[in-house]
Image (cartoon, rainbow, N blue to C red; front, top):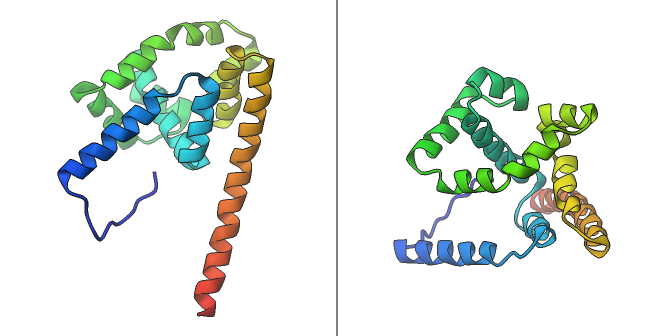
Length: 175
């Protein structure tokens, strides 16, 4: 996630209100298309990958994989795995809920073709395809078209962000 410095810090009540508002916004998502749209609007591709990795680490830890197995599967460091494990031990209700709710779709994925197993073994290389597969499997024809549009817009968002950085640097150097 991007780091930022806030010179005018919010008080505790304002932070809590923002958190509640954010949680309410997330809970208003009704289906996978809406979830994909929200993810696209809130996160950069790198941030989405980072959060997907955390969830995958939590799944692997829940399934009993070792740090070495997890490092090999999704190419993360021991401190990253340790942070997720600590969070699971101290809190983790959200992780456990999502892991349980998605358990059935993971079983189907594990039983699929060898190419799909390769994708499962190396999810960071195939995360958009894995995400799309899960979303598409629950979508109708109209929703599938909307999903394709969302994915294309996410790529445009990344390109736009890069173009904006270049423009901002140029204007900064010019002044």
